[in-house]
Length: 507
Ligand code: BES
Ligand code: ZN
Ligand code: ZN
Image 1 (spheres, rainbow, N blue to C red):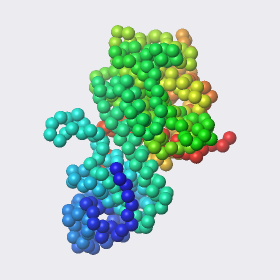
Image 2: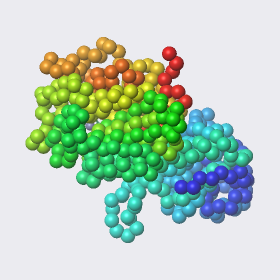
Image 3: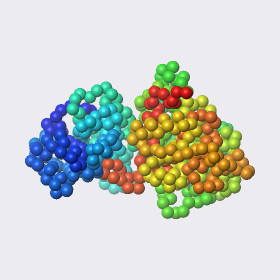
Image 4: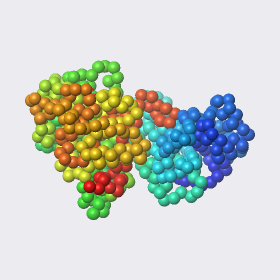
């Protein structure tokens, strides 16, 4: 997609579509909206009075050939109350623009950034929103006009951001970052949306390799004997119930500068269960189809690595995705089995549906061997995290407060909501096993913390943070600014972390 800037007067801009954000209440009276109201002969105040368009969040008003405006279409996008405005409002403005105009056949859309919302963070958010607006419903329908190569790619080819003055370097950089992150999220969403029969572990590996190749990120995909040689016992044990072979996807980004390349890497780890039936501890039928999204953490890492390859941060970044199905075949793991992970530690498997933490145990042990400055894993790990935080916040837990705080700060800057859960030592006993080094389900209720406590056993003394995105990877319903289904959650935080000057706070 082509992104440009313009400092022309919005009213005089000859273009296919002009998008203007309108705040509700007092805010609607302001500046550009008031000027528009004047040239439109009071139409907007009339609409506000009769209640048909009051600038409420998610509402919109599309006018064709508006009088007194050079644009062929004028879209007013409701942003809600101005006092609650944030970069998220601008992200929503971008999303509404691409969603509402998608059937209009516009190839280039002009969006006026709201007053006071032109800082680099807002510019980035607007571009991200514009790219994330389109949804992927009907991706596999056949027939006239329905073959969609990439269901999340919007129909518009260009976005012009309209600012009061000439764009500064920081704003241009932010637009590029927004574009790259948005594109990465489109990739992640497509991978997550792909049904389990089409998205097997090896397909995920192939997709990762193809996507990374274009961005100069190296990939290595370990399969069969290679997994055995390296002792990926937990990954192999989880995949044993499936006829689809597992794989371990390794993606490496190395900066060109020798000094930068010599720094310790940031390691990103994503759960890549391409379908989770629960295995022998089988899940109930209701809603099981959502378990095609159980590789959303892995897909977020793949998306983030492509963005990292394009944005070239000044440190090496390694992405790791253990990929497997979790099926109840004849050779499947059974409750009570004891398996050996890549670190040599043994795990008692009490519930085969707690499989994510098993494959992550192998991947985290591998991450530690890379001598990382910091590790972040991201996984649709527990229903308990959804109970704790709902579908508003992802959970974050970890081994070192400074590092967990960094992840939180970065997520907040990038507009992704994550909230910490405690990891005090009193919780250690949750995963104590009588027969092995650790057990894979807890003795008590706090399921999200239990899972994190198992992972903690495999990160040695490294700074490590774990994001549980079980409630965030899949959105049941779309809204005025974003489509339903996969969200691409996590990509922006992972990319943001890679781009930070320093990872760990001093000391
Ligand atoms: N993939 C699921 C977690 C999940 C639940 C993701 C809902 C997305 C939405 C995970 O593998 C799982 O099944 N966890 C179990 C653990 C339990 C058996 C200890 C759970 O949360 O019920
Ligand atoms: Zn499971
Ligand atoms: Zn799972």
